[in-house]
Length: 157
Image 1: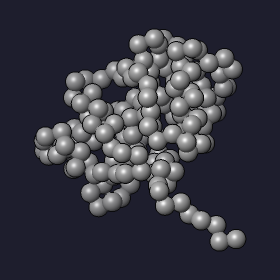
Image 2 (image 1 turned 135 degrees about the horizontal axis):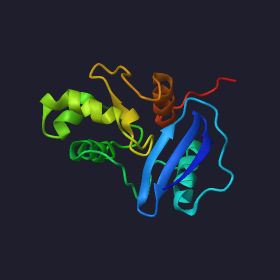
Image 3 (image 1 turned 180 degrees about the horizontal axis):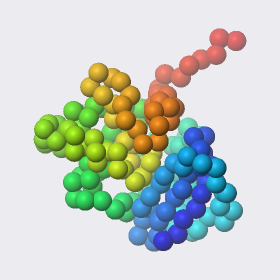
């Protein structure tokens, strides 16, 4: 497995993967030394994340290889169907997966998402529209949703 550390607007980000695909993208809560030479297997991921943060990418086109249970992988696959700039509730996600009673299990799988931003778990909110649970911190979830919002705050001056 190859890995690298890059800096994003939300902090340092660790990327792990190999020739099969990207298995982990995590936001770190500490300052780290940025990787100076990006491994070939991770270059596309680094470029696409940079484009996302620049606002020029709305969809990731990467080979993904997350490690999880069958259920977690079903949830993570469904998360990838949420369009850029849109949100759904945990209840809606549970319904899409065919079992509204699985809402807690769906939320748990959502929280174990190993591919920050690429599998857009930040697009899942509470049924009342509130920002709920986010492993990277709610301020990051809010930033990501505002970044993806089609309604950008305009400066008056």
